[in-house]
Length: 269
Ligand code: PEP
Image 1 (cartoon, rainbow, N blue to C red):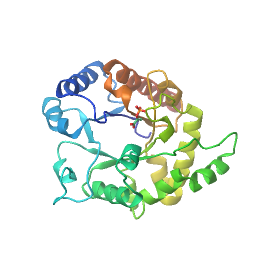
Image 2 (cartoon, protein in one colour):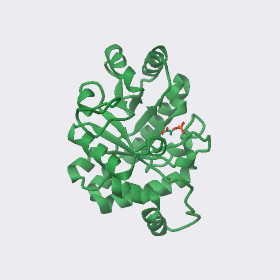
Image 3 (tube, rainbow, N blue to C red):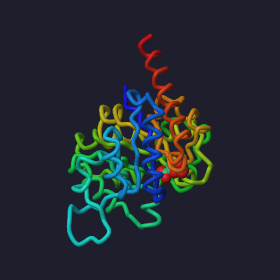
């Protein structure tokens, strides 16, 4: 069974007090972590104090630079993350649009993360909703492949070995759904994620595609999470705004834990 992952991207939010309260609160409220991998992506300044207080918290960085050290004012290197964070978010649409990160930089960052033995969460997504209507799977695949979504997956992962691919987490984040309060429907996300998984067969191989966790992200809330959790192809969620609220984030984790348990029972019956 593939990993189920619920990750919280706090973006540029929280004080140190908020950070401790969120991680502490979520860890206390959830005994489901055996089944769901919960990853906190706080602002990088809070990574060390969180790790010192909560050894068991699984942490990720929201950003790194593609070089290991040197004259890059304001940047964070993967070498600084060792023993603190295991995951790094790469290719988030805010990095692409607000900070002008292009395909080449995203590809370089991805490789730097992998070479440091950290796991990237690679975010890809389309600017405007794709018109998948009632199209067949192979037509959706063709549409995704020629869209900016498909092209950004290809360019971000150019030159990766199969063993590097096997460490990746993918996050399908339609740009129009991020922060808009308008999540994609579970059906739509499931179809696109199916196409992305089919692309991974072609870019890597069957085994990588079968095992790679692919998350959905974009206005996930306690209300929309069940719509995504019902699909076996959607391996979890990347949550922005709702990950700042302990009760709501915990509720989303529980939704995925229950869905996973249900699926496991069905598979073993
Ligand atoms: C995100 O920033 O990755 C995200 C999904 O944000 P939100 O859940 O707030 O749409």
